[in-house]
Length: 550
Image 1 (cartoon, rainbow, N blue to C red):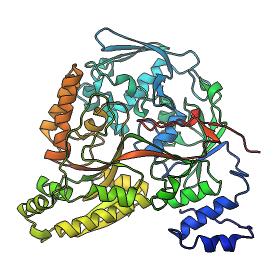
Image 2 (tube, helix red, strand yellow; image 1 turned 180 degrees about the vertical axis):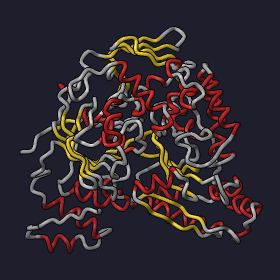
Image 3 (cartoon, rainbow, N blue to C red; image 1 turned 45 degrees about the vertical axis):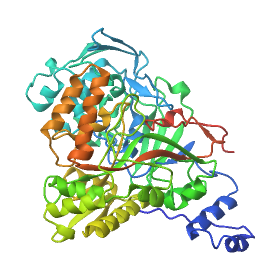
Image 4 (cartoon, rainbow, N blue to C red; image 1 turned 60 degrees about the vertical axis):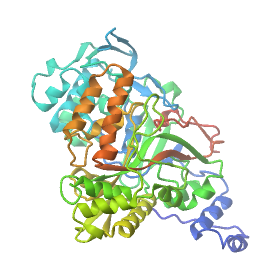
């Protein structure tokens, strides 16, 4: 349900203010400026210590199942892994106070801190991690990220059913506070994975007892900085400080509310009217207002590892043919999209892996070549777009997504002579369509989970849980496998670069459009503990108020 905001204005000079602003960009901008000017105080009558707009309504709060950034943002406050990322995006100790690594980089021994507890006060044990990781690997669980554990010895064979005995998997509780993990091969980013949601501990006994209802407020048990107090669908999520959290002494905010608002204009109206303290999602800055917002002290921007792209459904015509996919890619004017639609200074993307990962140089993409695009489309049997079947471009709600969809539709019609239908869906329906390949093309985004190109590339292996293209390449699968076995970092990056070239140039099952900029909107005189970083990590538990409401 769309939120409508009604503000009672008592400013005697309202009429003259409106007249002076009549020629501004939009009436919406007028509304925002007037609301801001007329506010007596920021956040008056708010009950929570922090109210932030989180984007779309979460689909789930199960750490093993989450795939969306808004879902993950909440889950990161309710649960914590062996390690965690701080507000600067730096990896540090979490549930594990320390760890030892064998000289061959294959065996890790994690020592759980004595104060690690569930939110009901029970100690967290190494057995909890073993049971949780086993649950993630079981096909019946449906984890899209279970492949991340395949670097553990025997994990892939267990997940596929080739080896039914879980004791053969390299995950073992040596005692209540000691967890042993044995890898298939040295993996530079393994410790970063230990801070990712799919490797968080979950209360397996509770899940076995109450099933999917375990994530409801009356049942859920976590181990993070906060507990789930309320979850009112399409209204708000309320988090309260967890007194049993090991680092509770450094958690400044007692009560936090997350608002599920996906429309950027509505979200900004809430902020401007003092009904929210923070806009934290990358798509909540209204594109039409960016030129104004960029000049305000509340606007904070920084690059991070995130790519806006779209996927083809490669499992059926017309996009089963790589010539058609390339033709659609070659007529995209990315600069037009970033200058006309996104407007925050984003870099155009032809590679899938963003810049910023030390030592990795992504390959070049297909570029912008109109004549080559038309030649390929004709060669595929659709000269001038004639006979091209009716197909759709799917996107989820949001002003930005809609603007990009309309722009792409116009480009394909003008340059290729094809007509594309646009289909907009709310978040949960969109995810269902994405998972079932119910689209021709679909808007997508990917945020890096750790500082390595593998976090972008390994998802597109055949039948990968996050592939969602229907694309399969034996060569690509082999390159990803070779990279996982290569110890030399330079050679490993060369292999991954070859794999990425297949992805964005040779076969093109996906088309990158631009690299994200992390955008947060908040008053720096009121909030602290928010820092730009390459992983776009902004733990709510590390945010604090510089001054309290009176």
